[in-house]
Image 1 (cartoon, rainbow, N blue to C red):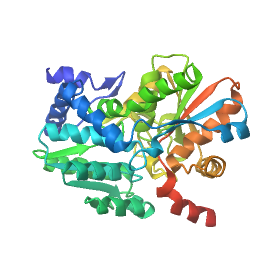
Image 2: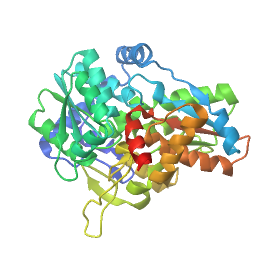
Image 3: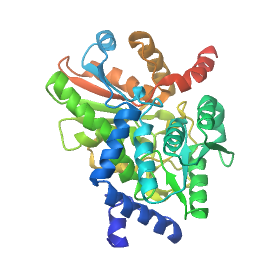
Length: 388
């Protein structure tokens, strides 16, 4: 496959691509070629599926939130329980797949970026299990508000590097990880956790996260005998959302709804721009500089979004709305008290919108909410917020 044809694969309409230095593009093109080689390889898929079942604990349930449905009224609300995965979030699906790929192409070291820490924990976990050293880059601000996840990563044997450049958040962590990859490209594999970045990462992350909608589609047909009226997922970089949507894109009657934090609404308020090696909707100020974000959910605190989400928005196939931090905080408490399930603050944005949406739909309709992670990591942060 020529390099030109590889690059073309990285586009979703006008979005995507690979806007990186030549030496880094060569590394990424090689990863893209190897991904294309292995993604349909029976032996690779058998190993991946084995670990999903025996290590991650899939398939996870599609739980009818009966109490919440009764309280809200309207459509039935189902929760896709990614919070029950080993490490507590959807991130392990992708981390495991990419590390298995990295081992096959001869990588000796794993690096990753993380915001809320769940991707870092998943990467550290899979690296430990498969015997590869890893370094996790995390914004200094995020290391402070997600200190428990930092300890988990270190406990699992990872080196956690707190990045204090710029605003010390996810964007800066990604920048530092790319710098590491350029400097150590001969033996290092950069394991990106969200559906962002230059080709092949958006396609690769979607591939490994599509297990979410593969399962939920089968499960909802078994439980309800029909497809959902809507699938709802929180959207920062967009990995859990693109995985939740993947197997429903062709089903035009199913609404695909991404919920952004109002404080970091890249799709709702962004403009097309090149950002961290790819073209997507990006939050810029009047001078063309990155606009500061301040979401209560570290995993959504990002100025960009995956290029396929930008494309789904541009074509009208996806709907993208916002939820405020306060709405997410209220949903966090509601789901905890009503269903006995403590969601991640990221997932709480999706829950908040689903609660509104349910009242607008008929009682015969069904909504699937992707519960992308559990809220253990956020309990101390929420405790402090509520105390104030």
